[in-house]
Amino acid sequence: MSDEAIQIIARGPRAVAEAAAAALEAEPATEALTFSILEEDEDRDVWRIDAFPTEADEQMAIRRVLAVYADLRVSEEVLADADWLAMALSGLPPVRAGRFFVYGAHDRGLAPASTVNLRIEAGAAFGTGHHGTTVGCLLAFDELLKRRKFGRVLDVGCGTGVLAIAAARTGSPVAVGTDIDRVSVRIANENAKLNDAGARFVHAFGLDDPLVRNDGPYDLVFANILAPPLVALSQDIKRALQPGGLTILSGLLRTQERRVTAAYTSKGFRLVRRLHRDAWATLVLKRP
Image 1 (cartoon, rainbow, N blue to C red):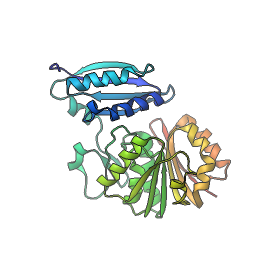
Image 2: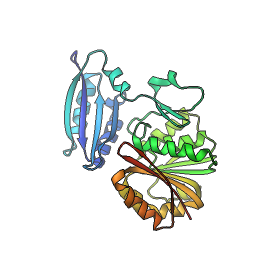
Image 3: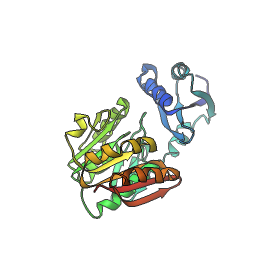
Image 4: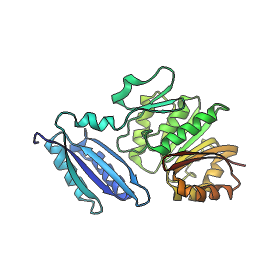
């Protein structure tokens, strides 16, 4: 490898970027690779992979894996020789959301004694706690916890598992997360162990899967996904909830808020609260 450290960037549709990220995760030559995947532009369905190779073999392996995906636009940038990793990590500072403090391994010494501290390692999964939608969910949950506890909690599209782990760490005896992506499920279970949290995560398609249904009905359902699946899942989330149960929905832009709210109020839900963070909205609704 040359003396110059590089960052390899790939942009493309979510499905393609997620498939490429999973391929990087499975590639033996990139086993120790530091990389991330996150949404860059929801309206245009642009997702971004940032990879930081430290060896020539890693560089070649990344290029080989990404070249398989014709819909990805791949570029490279030269980083400062000594400080590139620190620069990358400094872009993900710890996040405070109500009683919750979310951090990565590089910031473990900053966790206050007075907060519920959640160490979340993202790997190839979404949901470090830095995105406005995840922060919105944690803030909404923090407010709800001031008035009641939740015995059974479900996290739909769990990503890194941060929301179900937050529930388990604040006293929910049943905290279940589900995702259609096997890599996310593995990472979420690893994060649960890191946090000594009694949350479990399962690979499942839909809320009618026995792995999801058997622990229901739930007192609280998180769904931090995207607006179209939130609309499509409105009836399924209603069935998954206890009468009077609550759902926290996010992953939607403010411009999509009315559409998602209408889908749930048409099923009898009542809007309890809305939160805005940057361009993102979080909704709290109550099942009739």
